[in-house]
Length: 70
Ligand code: FES
Image 1 (cartoon, rainbow, N blue to C red):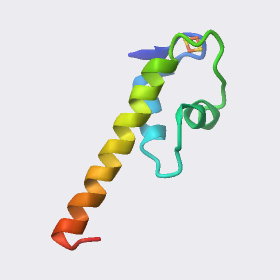
Image 2: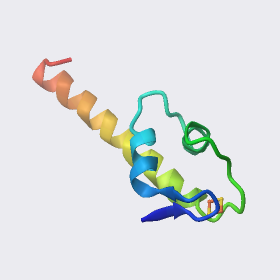
Image 3: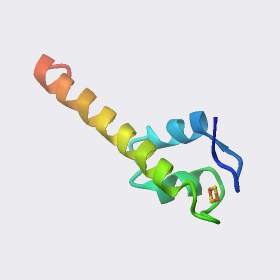
């Protein structure tokens, strides 16, 4: 699925970048993929992708703390 029509960004590639520990926000995703926001129609979706990735990383971290794998 295309997330950003202006930059032809696919959901999969956005999720891969968002999952990287250094990704702090949606702007990082655009920069890592070599583009920038144009019309802005995709920003809310990109925010959701980044937040989901952050929550997933946090859940994995918490799980490792509980199991002692950290
Ligand atoms: S759809 Fe992403 S900047 Fe326009």
